[in-house]
Length: 174
Image (cartoon, rainbow, N blue to C red; front, side, top):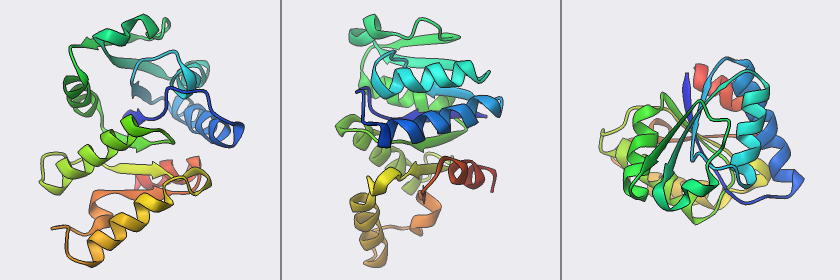
């Protein structure tokens, strides 16, 4: 399975990096391909290192202006003109999308894929690994939108949340 991962390019505290590393090991051990931002920096670099060490394949998709931060050991590295093209390429190459902790870029990516799913323009599972309750605010907001009629489809058809890396893979298999 080609699993697109949205996450931070910053180095993070172990409470965030350890679950991300566990997720990456499970991805690699499962024989899956990591489709990610292609960076060697921060959590992105950690993911790539762990996936590669566990036997997985790496497909990076990065923006031209950041190609100097490209992961050297990637099996494939695609360079796009801009962020919009990058997001489209990431989604096109994925069988599933997993969201790990991240900043504004990650938030932009997850909201875009949920919007695409809402309109039937994307039909791939989207699972958020909610490490340390990092996305509890997003979950609360999405649940409110669902409860108050702002979503044309049930929230569980658009996105799900998992508390552990193993739970992410259980949801992807379901």
